[in-house]
Length: 132
Image (tube, rainbow, N blue to C red):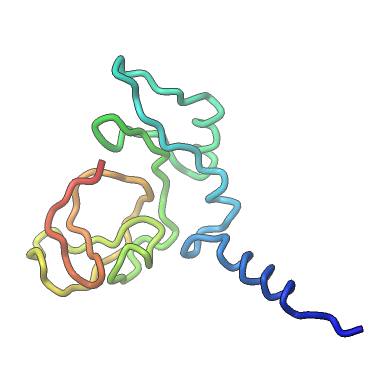
């Protein structure tokens, strides 16, 4: 009886896709959020959400006009990059880099940080953009 290798390959391929750029699957699975505040300024953030965020070294912060996220340290902070897909957080160009200039950046020090920055996308600086 000849066994097929296809099921084994499918499982291996599936497992390889479970992590994000160096972050452990366990750590990513524990990060709660994001949340959106309602018109009266309330969110559905629970004590358990705060504990899970704290467990990965993060804290829940307002990361936009109405958004809240668990902001936690990026394990690849400072790594050279040419696109955010190479980072746990974002690929950031030096602030003084002009828009539409080919450049290399560094991975952000935090994940889910929000705010304004000069991002690098496909090796090109965006100029200052704000992410909500």
